[in-house]
Amino acid sequence: MGIGCWEYKMIPGMNPRAMKQAMKRMGIQQQDIDATEVIIKTSEKEIVISNPQVAKVNMMGQETYQVVGEAEERSIETEPEINQDDIKTVMEQTGVDEEKAREAIEKNSGDLAATIMELKPE
View 1 (tube, rainbow, N blue to C red):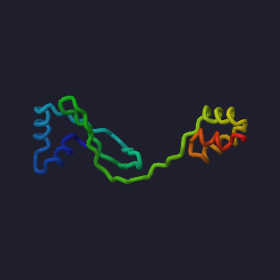
View 2: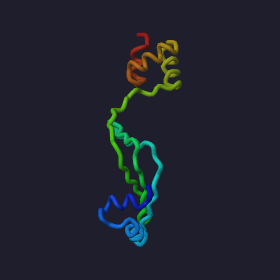
View 3: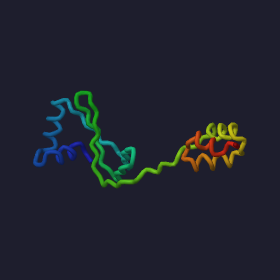
């Protein structure tokens, strides 16, 4: 897709070549990006745009991106990230083995304080 295709969509009926020249005079540069997928992440979901047409537009030093394509929304899985330091801390504080520490951390959604309180002998 040439640069003219994007401008032609933006202003129907205008000659793509004339549009390109007008944009150049206004200091606007456009570059097509060969993207296969665009993912926009929010705190609750992902918006996935498959087979997108993407253009980077530079206007007076400010870069923006134009994305056209079919969008699909997906929920974000919020599994807690459990690392070895967390497991080691729980093991040291409670005296349990690695497997039991990992299971308890998962059960408590990554909350180390709750995990330690649950596993600590009275």
